[in-house]
Amino acid sequence: MTTELGRTAALCSAAALIALTWAIAPKLASAQSLQTVNMAIPSKSFQMIIYPLAKERGFMKEEGIDLRIIYIAPVTSIQAMLGGDIQFTGAGSSALVSIARGNTPLKVVLATNDRVLQWLLTRPEITHPKELKGKKIATTGVAAIATFMLRQILTKHGLDGNKDAVYLDVGQGNQLPALLGGGFDAAVLSVEQRYVGLDKGMREMFFFGNEVKNSWGTLATTDKLIKENPKVVGGFVRAAIKALRFMRRNREETIAALLRFSGVSREQASRVYDDLIGTFTRNGAVDEETQRNDLAIIRQVANANETIPPARGYDFTFALQADKQLNKANWKP
Image (cartoon, rainbow, N blue to C red):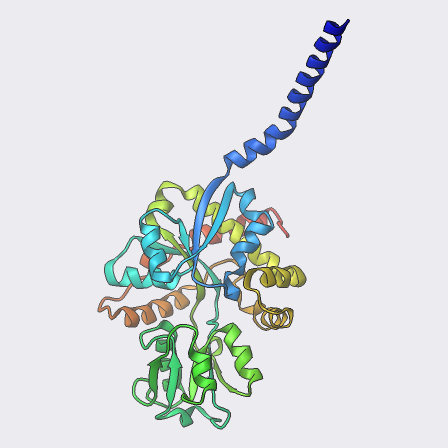
């Protein structure tokens, strides 16, 4: 009797184990089928929110991707990508500079914004662009992309952008303290810095997105990955475009994601969303005029003599194809 009971218990245990195995097998198989993809981002700025959002909402998983986001400086991320340690970088502009300087085998495959998210704030007593003549402007670098854009903007407003202002590199993130400290007359600021500056009484002179026709927040990968694993590139870009669509339709969820991602206050996250959601592209691509404008700036930054054709720096095939597929499927977040 005891033997029979033991045998019955053993059979029940075995049956339970088999049932449990069958229950978890699909999940294990699903996890095992995901391909790990490493992406570098340079900062926790608003335009980068689409990538953690694509991961959180399951869009990357739907494409068979286990996304891992790593914070790496732009130039270092290019080196890591060429070495195969990461597959994508949010420092697309640095990739274009590398292409201009050495014909590096890279491509920008996605643009998150079709307007430049940079601002020039000045001391409150400066009320007109021409009053910037001879004034000191805090930048992230005299050869930074935003600085070359500012030169163009000042020229557009009647100054000699190359000579009439003094551009000084105060180091990444130090522009606003330099302006508020009184030692500078103006500063080129990011999204987050802009709000603090305005709240402290500084004057907004320019929103770069209203002054120049350029892209911002671009994603780059290697020619090798495009050639050898187009499925991963296509899936990654499609997931990002899903996130772009999600952002436009879901204000509260996007603000909540930005809080988790960047650690800013809810008030600031709400201001950022409401002010800038309209700057995000609808299909992850920008037109050829914008591409040419971008490359003209890049040529100056890289001090390159040769004009760079758009086809060497950009490949929006995956973005346009993904947008077309999602439209055909009537996909909505």
